[in-house]
Length: 159
Image (cartoon, rainbow, N blue to C red):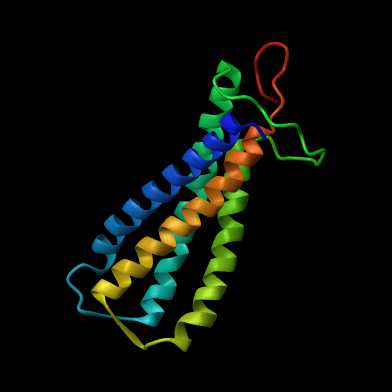
């Protein structure tokens, strides 16, 4: 990986983290604003749509932007790793979102009961924003790295 590719990957990962952190704050206010105490079951349920939305958008948007930049020649592709890949960005994003939601949902239901029964709004806001940022960064990083291995056809298109 060249320094330019590494910088691109780092920048896109940080952008994904920042956007998903900000959106998580907004949706936390919409879902829990005005409540002083929030029980862990509500947090576990809320993790499902949050995880789905973050995984879907953190896969789809960076993939589409990276593909556009590859075709335009503003970013160089990485060598393909030889594995089979799903080229349909929408289908790939949906599969990632469903898988992420299943795993994240299970982890929330297993781990949240180990903590406090009720959370303050400030604690929920901090938790949801950090969770959104970390999940967005992780998924975005993988999505951008995967998109960078796209092969461009002689006509300037990706398969």
